[in-house]
Image (cartoon, rainbow, N blue to C red; front, side, top):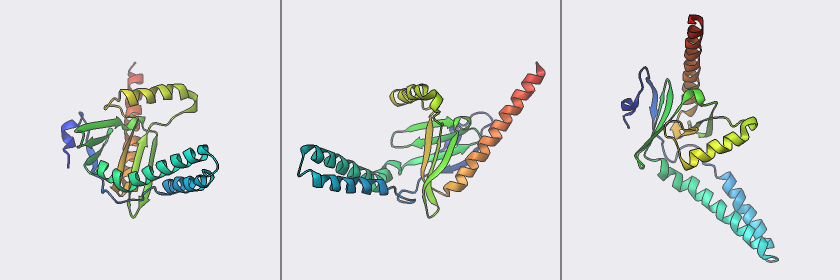
Length: 193
């Protein structure tokens, strides 16, 4: 297990530590199977036109890649990751890259479990994209892809963890307590003025 305590801020405490269990949880293969089927159906039309052939090849190629990724590559990619939830932040250490990234709980508006099966699944935490700030969101996404800030990730996913709903509840509770504490401090600062 990675030692996250070396990265704690003043007043920060660890609420959860874990690591993925590769191969556990639901595998999103439905979409890839649909792409493969679409490729085969469009492939029948490839006898008529080269355009149909190219579209069929695209569907088949994409479907096979997604299938292989979900069944094999994802497991290898996440095998040496470690996750941590504190009362202020969410952290992820990728040992293959020797890289620690984190995000502040207060910024994560969307917290949800995905691909849950047999008490294993993924926990996604991220910023909500507002339609009113669509261009700003595109600019932010572009910046985060070209020059990522490991200290303010727009989203972090704990993949293939045990008891994702329990961890989700911990995240939501920690966020609520953090926001309550910030509101209380802001109220005290206003009354002191």
